[in-house]
Image (cartoon, rainbow, N blue to C red; front, top):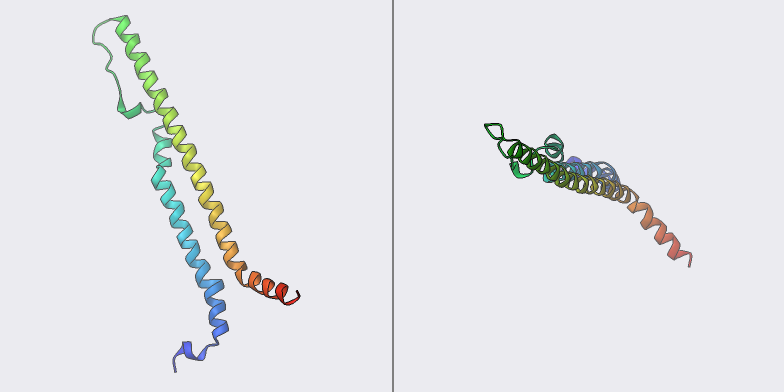
Amino acid sequence: MEKSERENIIIMWFLWHFYEMPKFLFSVWRKYLLFGLDYFSIPLLLKTLFSPWRKYNWVYPKGFDIKEFFNTLISNTFSRILGAMCRMVLIIIGVLVQIFIFVTGIIIIFLWLLIPFIIIGCILFFLTL
């Protein structure tokens, strides 16, 4: 006789519902969190926060031309500011998505653990009507 045939079905259900399935849900939740980090590239965006936007970088003039020097300085500064603003928007959206995934995962796991008690409560409620 196999081990599964000798075990009580209620004990097997408790093990599945309260041990195996939460472990699986935590694994899926972790993968969603890692996907969110990878999709929005938050660590990379933080590392390159003040890099020029789309690598637009003007070369400074070889000789002494004050007008071209300041033109290049302002253009490079504007490119870095534009890059920082765009990256900050993406970082904020990514962090908000990560918070949403985190909270949703907590709610799903919590509700999964409460399902049997909710069902028993609903049955008791309708029996008392």
